Length: 97
Image 1: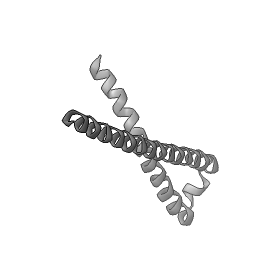
Image 2 (image 1 turned 60 degrees about the vertical axis):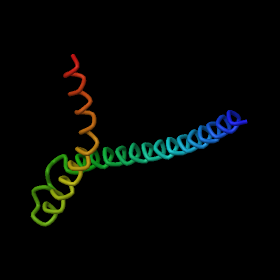
Image 3 (image 1 turned 45 degrees about the vertical axis):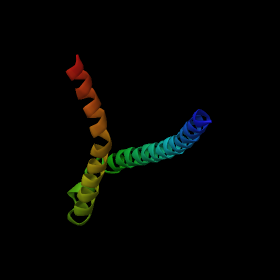
């Protein structure tokens, strides 16, 4: 009888932990997809900013230049957030070789 109770308890604990783990991994996957979409939006907007100011007219103007430079710095900052992980992975691979 005692072994039956222990087995039943372990079964309940394992089912509960498996279910919790499944939902946690599902939520993590949703967050990863959200971050990937955010990264794509940032990359697209960076490319469009470069296209808009390909001749340097906005950057040279005093009034729009300040706003444009601030926007460019923000874009670079956001790009660095995502590229840091890739750089770290490359550095880790070089260290293992």
